[in-house]
Length: 470
Picture 1 (cartoon, rainbow, N blue to C red):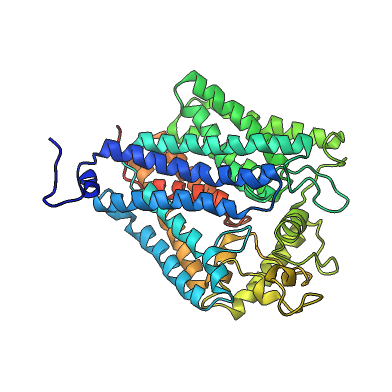
Picture 2: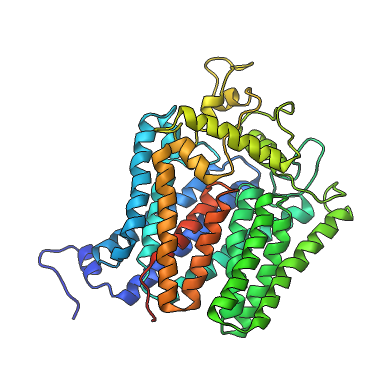
């Protein structure tokens, strides 16, 4: 007979009678919503061609609220392991200091909700914390497997859209990455080719490891096909992040094969990364994609002109006299150096979430004093709203305390994940550990975004989970 509390509500009775098996199914649903809802809602502006990217934030909010409820239930049922208290508390520090940063920010509304088209305000960070805690409460290895499948599925969904963008140039904000260059760059449903490259790094790593360890032949075939597609599409992000992602995924599968002592023949799966990547380069070299005749990286033109300036008016145009936009190293050096200067003057509380561009503004230009902020921003040549180093970006926008807390969160997660793998010696714990490490390394050349980060924080949380066999 089901338990019932005296004078209790239906909801409290539901929680009281919730078994680990039923709770695990709910957690699986919550983690899958984190993987898919943001991309699904982004499909509306991408397919319609209308500038309605605020809907992406709606997708994040839907998943965030669901996981917020699940995390609360997990805490009540005491499914959250005590060994996860350090990363959870460190994440809590980033939230608390985010509130202080919001109070001292340039625009509190933007600091809470995020800049239109980005949506990474304090509210988004709260949702990331919910994803993280929900994943920490995972009880069974089967739920980890479900999350890995969800990451592969999210990559496949975005890659299908990416293929359409590459071969047709349609439903894309990145058909032209400058006035002269038609690159048909793939952004999928991630809002930016660079953000897509970050997401596909996790998806490719999951697919390669899944190919090695999934038992069903059909699942293994699907994984290797997905790996080929992911590798091919990543090359059409024309980004340093994409190249780093390919390298990290190859290293991850080699480490996985050696650590679990799987048959060494599985290392040949790296050809599913190399061959599609070479084919993508050959197609560009042959002039079959856009108006390109030579493959090269276009990080600067994508992140600066096509994304922040042209798509959402979050930065000024490029100052060609100061930075060589076609030199990827020079672009990243310029962004990092200028961000370090911003940190030196906003060290304690930062500029406020999604407001890195604000301290750079120096003129109204042709915009009047009563103009919208986006009209003012585009008048300021040489300004930018994102630095592609999440550790610097967090420190610059939310203060040094938040930057340190972020590092502490990830380091403690990796330590717990490594100890967990040494104890359990199963492929799920190794896969999640490698995904977390890969994601943390990608943050050195990438930055947080609502499509990627929702999935990453699920992975990081699962890395700390105290799991057991079904």
